[in-house]
Figure 1 (cartoon, rainbow, N blue to C red):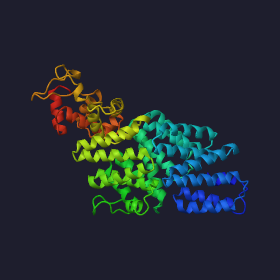
Figure 2 (cartoon, rainbow, N blue to C red; figure 1 turned 30 degrees about the vertical axis):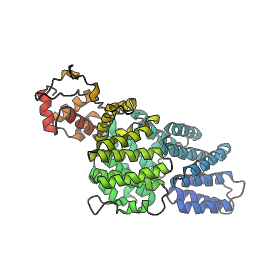
Figure 3 (cartoon, rainbow, N blue to C red; figure 1 turned 45 degrees about the horizontal axis):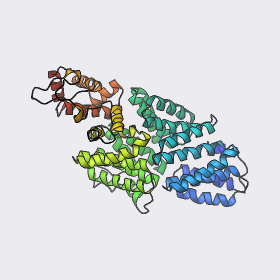
Figure 4 (cartoon, rainbow, N blue to C red; figure 1 turned 90 degrees about the horizontal axis):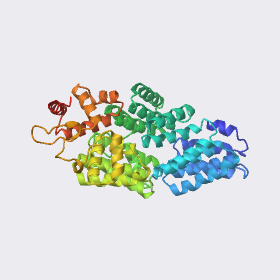
Length: 471
């Protein structure tokens, strides 16, 4: 795609066009320092009247600032690219500059602004394949807003358009679409998308920055699916610390990401977030909290509020696992304050059962009440806060008090469905496939069922349910 765009624009002077191409290629390969040097060299070689190539250099500069966490400089350079590419009818740079500006705004928690920029990029694309990047960007936003049908349509069309583009956006889009397919009950399509990414990964033995990011995206997807062995495999290849080995924090990727300069580079923060989730999955809570604290500090330093919210969610999960309810609620409250204005949904829902229970506690404490109720509804659980349950009235579905004198809280319709499948002996994964929801969501329902039936294990919950004639 890049070669075709450059071939359509001769006039780069004595070597200036070739160096500009090399600079842009280096940026897409994750080699920002080399790209910066090449961009400066290109400017020295390019004629004054070479708008396409100078626009490319401006784009490269903006992207490199974005990847380095220098958002103000990135914004200036990307707006300069728009100003020069639009009048010239330069489709590639007009689309890419808006897509990267949209990504910057997403990182800063401005999702509606990002939506507007992606929509502008789609118009500018004039139906050319590069418009697939804008479609996939919109797909990510609609996924976060939990509009799965619209997200799936956008991601599907976007992937079709950019099939020949670089590996990273294709793999990102494929894995996100796989999530959508799982959530909508199409496990076969999700498996095909997983396989597509795995085939792409198998073709790359060298661990470049781009392919390390690919491995980490694949690892995060495996964690979301509850597939810890696969997550461990990709984490090891990506160079993350072995959670079963020596003390966490000594992994190659984390050391490379955080040593030296404190600049909150995009790659470093992504590695930190990935490592935090991996350690959390293995119960290394102190290490996960340390990575989340570092991530939050770096994110706040450059105003990347969405990353800060993700860090707070990890801290909330760690504190909850350590039975520190006050710290967990405080951390989740900070994440809610960041995310509420843009109505992020899956930012929380994809984190699973701990967040569902913590949200219930937030609701009881009247923290962001309307937003939290919406999030709980998206979980499909929506447990009643204790203060709203009238102990003297019959509960939902006519559930009687348990024989031991403890009151059983109302079960939602979805919880009853899950409970009946549990009684049939189905696993969490089988229940997820049957109901068309994520395994993490099933776990949230199971946890809520245990709480409401005053049970600590499946057999006890099913026995109590039979006593109460729920199954």
